[in-house]
Amino acid sequence: MPHSDILPDHLRIPERTHRIASTRGVTVAATDWGRDNDPRPVLLMAHATGLHGHCWVPIVKALGERFRCVAVDQRAQGDSTVPTVGGLVWSGIADDIEIAMGALGLLGRTDVYGIGHSQGGFAVLETERRRPGTFAGLFLYEPVIMAIPPAAEELMQSTAAQDNHMAAIAERRRPVFASWEAAVENFSVKGPFARADEDLVRSYVYWGFTEQPDGTIRLKCEPANEAAIFRNSVTDLFSNVAHLQCPTTFAVSESTEPIFEASGPALAELMPNGRLLRLPGRTHFGMFEDIGDMANIIATSFRGD
Image (cartoon, rainbow, N blue to C red; front, side, top):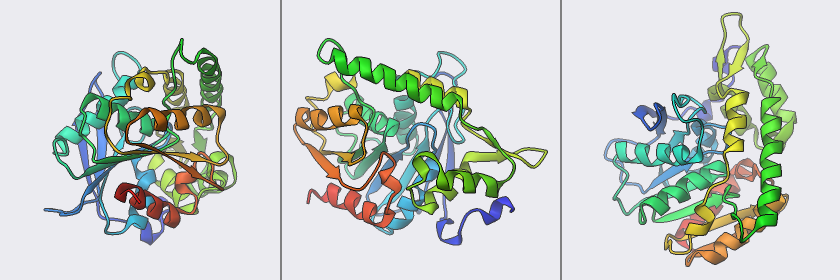
């Protein structure tokens, strides 16, 4: 099957791609699905570890005309490059969001909202910490924002074990498939993608792999880089959110991991305008399970309903 046949027509949305210089030698790829002089409020979208900005395409489509959507490929993922110095520290992931927003003229506006999944949840909330008022509201789906010692030493120990576990899984990730169709078939039935809508699988494969001279396809996010991102996932953000006024929804799925069950409610309690939202029937990839319903949940959260 040719590459072009992997993506259904309804996911082919006009877009503009920007290449932006970030920190540590990284060049960030940002995608803007907006129009010239777009009057809609902006929705800045930050993806989970190992994914890429175009994984948001099914959500962009489901949101329809409600937002001008912009997504960033965080460093070493998608079409963004690997740091040339300093490694894959998480402060750099937030740099990518902040700097891309500045380059696209999104800082200092009052109509910019943010959505982050897992690693992406950290990235947008860390940007709000650095620049309070950057976002009019945030929707964070199981963000990787854990407590640090001594307040939660036991949780921290379990978090470190979880990170190591996820890093080990990432290092074993299969990087090459015989064809585009083979990759789609694989992710449709395995791992966290198995319960996700097919539109996510096709978007992930279409934009997340490159074709090799021998006709095979290879992951853009190298397994070793994904593993390094997991190993660097401990930050001090948890201890520095209590003063943030941004209305923020922390979404926790029914089939969640202990680290998210521990951190989500605590973060919602810490932030003055924090809100906990429990989503039954969903998993850690629940952003992309029943996408039409999820789009409505996101939009409703920003209205404060």
